[in-house]
Length: 117
Length: 113
Image: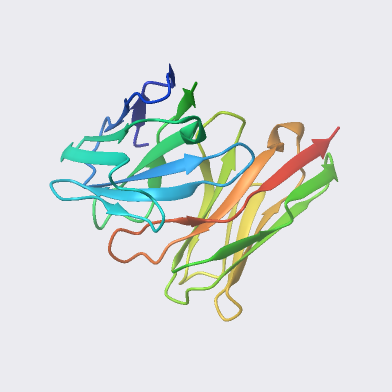
């Protein structure tokens, strides 16, 4: 099956710093990737939809200037948490959708645990 | 937008018994309904999915049923085993445009040996 990787798997940073998380589709081209956030014992909440070569579409309530998304190639999307604060501590998961026409299935990355001190 | 409700939030069953988790959705345009299993600290794993042109799908001990009229779908796990213990999420997607998924709130399933 399709493989999606994320890097780093965990990161600890000081309040006020920025953190970049990478999401890669390893064996297929993903024109669309999705970024989710999951707080402890809660569900996955979609933050934004990342489209290769165009601006990301953010869900209501998600600050686009704080969570910068770049999808510069068909295999890489990045999420940068700018000026991170303790309330941004969460599990961030990306997913990539199969190419158009191949179905709806999304393949998830292993997640990145962000802890902001 | 789409809203997906999931029940129950926790479920404990004896090993060997069946478990049923139910979800309802609000958007009649939704046509893709996956179920995910997530273990602590891990990525969600797709265990089964169903599309709106099908009423039921089965894969060994796991089955999903869909009632489009009532806008609800259910996950059935038979002959439960300890390794089935995890959090299960349902989701729905319209299948148009970017096909974003809306997740249910999750069910923590515990199999009692």
